[in-house]
Amino acid sequence: MKSFKNKEAKEEILTDLSTMQISKTTLIFEKSLELFFKKWRGHSAEVDSFLEYFQLEKVEKHGNWYEALKCNEWCPLNTNAIECGNKVIKDQDTFRERWPLGRFCGKTLEIVHSWSKHMNT
Image 1 (cartoon, one colour):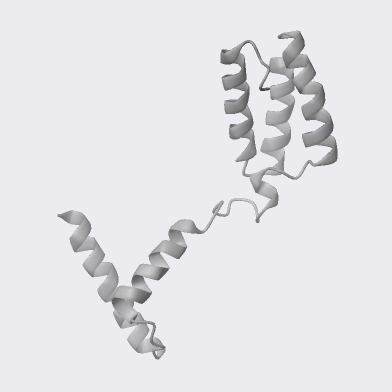
Image 2 (image 1 turned 90 degrees about the vertical axis):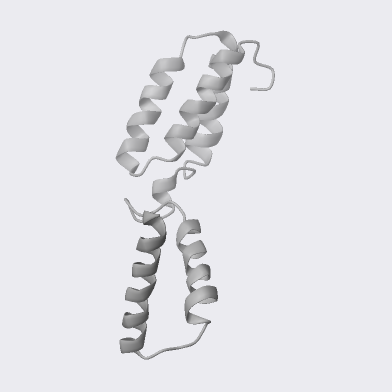
């Protein structure tokens, strides 16, 4: 794609690929892939050349590049937000101590109450 003369087509293809990559189910991915090829085939010689390469490399040889295959369907695509929240709780609230379940539940309610007040201001 580096040699594409049509920069608008290049950007639109990259956007389409990014959108397909985050497909949450195999069915959605397969349908979007079908529509992608239908949309771009015959656009230009350079696009057709790219599509041939893409078909061979990303569909036939390495077809497991979309998100639905990385976890169960409809799960979060990554855990960055969860891990970030976990670190804050450990550093600011629990101080990395192990607590009995009752104390943990009480502290959890305190944390949520504190965050709710903070977010309301």
